[in-house]
Length: 275
Image 1 (cartoon, one colour):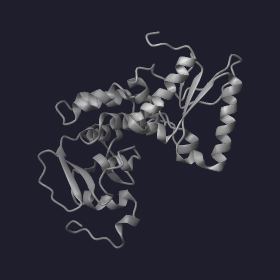
Image 2 (cartoon, helix red, strand yellow):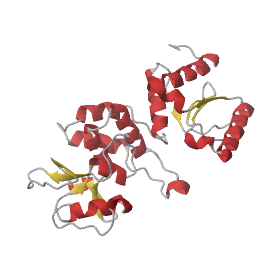
Image 3 (cartoon, helix red, strand yellow):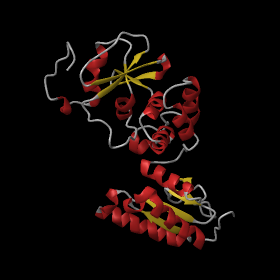
Image 4 (tube, one colour):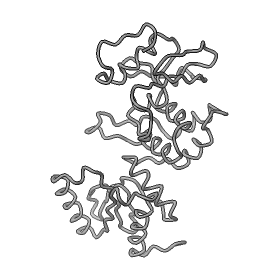
């Protein structure tokens, strides 16, 4: 570890905030950033990122050089309002973290992270109902850091970020559908029948064509989830809607199989290109 830093137990057993804290506390004007900040904020990333024993830290431009093992130091402009704390550890805000990650992620991965930042969480599941930031906040940090590395990629991603996606898989599915030339679906909008009754919320949907698209993750193989999925399919039928079920195998080859499946449902419902 770094000079003056000691560990009394294997670091892998400690929370990430505890592992990164020593590297920040002995160096003023630092904050956890990039991949480390994204993990602390529970933001989605690519699976190929570095192992957990490598920490990213921002040190303001002009500050003394910092060279420590296990630490990747980014020397760049950092405003006070772009730093928050998690478990007492200075960390770049979700907004600034998203912009910094433009250096490392693809456009689609950056859209998925942005979707996660602006989504409205569910209090019963996450203990909060306020988004980490807004699309306007993301636009503001882009405008503030002109000339920053990754800025063009961030601007491209910003145009594709939407409120309503609940997972990176839903984001990737939406992007694939749109890139296939299909209309952009709505995200997690409840089905409301003519009598005003509010039903379940499809992951993605076309209310005009009464089509609901459901992404089924690995947990959908569990017995209890299978029963819920069957009940959901029965509700779709009773409401006169078409259910399109998408799984991991449909997401291969840039999710073209998923987009093709959605196209079939739209065509059967009367949609035509150019309509």
